[in-house]
Image (tube, rainbow, N blue to C red):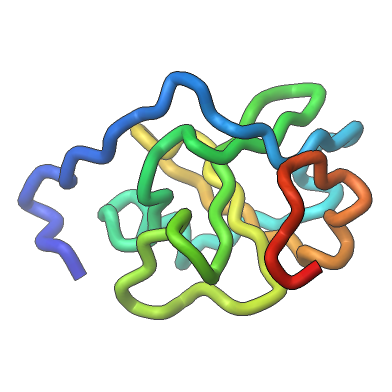
Length: 117
């Protein structure tokens, strides 16, 4: 785990990202806030590799998105689980990581085709 006394590594912020989910409801209706992952996020140990590249939109706000496989998530401790989607609220400040089940979120997926579909 990174030293909490050291500054977080710089993660480039993408100006034009890809919206992957358009949710007609608040995120709390389809995902839960995970305190352990949020704690890791605040220390740079569970974050999007490129902050702002993948997004989810809700009526209230936009969230960063990360998946357990692929290049979207920096997860050195291997906490991510298959079949879950990770949403990042305030990834540059007081990070909150929300966890949702991919199968339940698929009706709201608007991004490019997923490799396993």
